[in-house]
Image 1: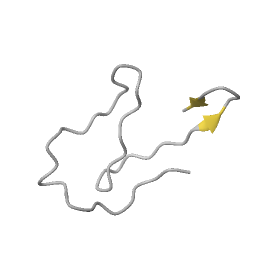
Image 2: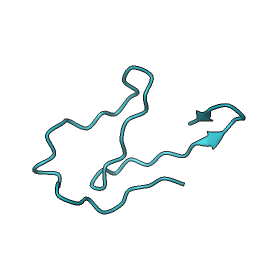
Image 3: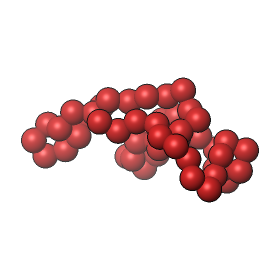
Length: 50
């Protein structure tokens, strides 16, 4: 299971990008340590699904 962790070298104030909230180009958004978002994925034989 992936989940928020501890940010090293960056924090919410110094992160250079805005937080994505939806898939961009088919890639799920990065779960940042300071975000309230969480996501669960399940392996479906050939790919993960949310």
